[in-house]
Image (cartoon, rainbow, N blue to C red; front, side, top):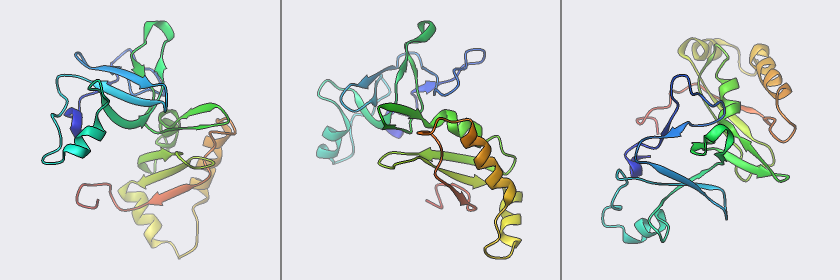
Amino acid sequence: MTENCGVSHCTLPGKQRPGTVGYPYDGVQSRIDAANDEIQVTSPGLMLGYYKEPEQTRQAFTDDGWLRTGDKGVLDEEAGCASAVASRTCSRQQGQVRHAGAIEDKLVMHSAVEACCVTGANLGQPLGIVMLNIEAARGLRTRPSGRRSRRRWRHLGAINAMLDPHERLDCLVIVTQPWTVESG
């Protein structure tokens, strides 16, 4: 987030925690708001506020000065790693939290996938948004309309076979346009 100068958590060589966004950088503290599982952070790198937007600034921070990220997660208490934070895109269903990062890690293993995002907030089942790499996007554009790649659908089936029922992806949305600032 630009609101915290892009500095929050990172994975470290030899200390990877699958399904997490890693450990806080030095000087960054994180916590989970018990009311809504939101990840909140504080650090010297936080913005002072939005330019000429005092109400938006007030909404961005808790009363005690922590930045509301809008991201959901959990803290990993295992092995003394109380500061490892689960991936940003999470949702609750049937009392269980599903972590998008672990699912994204599996999705991106397909050779055609350049980037992906799993979302599930306010949905009955999560879905995956997959940006194809250049070669795969070209191949998709040259196929006759309506023809689907069985290989990609097999990948979705293989991913879902590794997941609990509440984590299974309802569908994959395939995007051929690169995710850039210019494309929005």
